[in-house]
Image: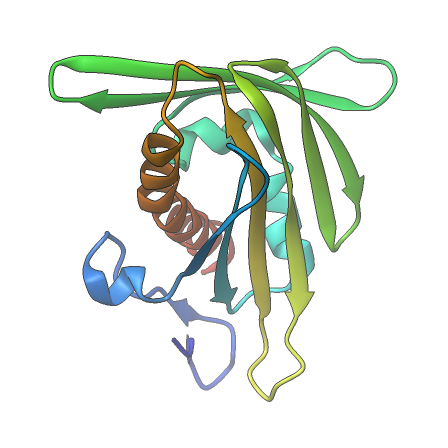
Length: 186
């Protein structure tokens, strides 16, 4: 979706915020089966913001739980050799509450890529990246690409993880878009 720019190019109007099918269509989602129980899931959205603006929202680790759906906690941990964060995701289904915890080691390559690898947590494997690619088209903006390689423990069916991430990742990217409009639209 093209941004609505005012005559002075300072005001961006945010597309409708929610999870209706039209809005969810702004996110491209692919799932790839890797070896055994491993999956790669990739979600992508075009945003009318610079890579640096998106970067600033993504590395504000302490604030992510304020606007990412189902992220109950996101906290930077003391770690002298780089950046580590603890995140806890929570999902309510029927009368049950599911949660998953990860401690991620972050490698930041400003302003284009943030890599993460689980060093502790509730998955067998959990690693990926956030990539910001500035548009080479006439429209100013950036493609934000989230790539995750995940393998659940034996207790969690792979299909359940695929379905959950397939539902949550588009909403997460839309939440990031909404946050960008909140922070950078005047």
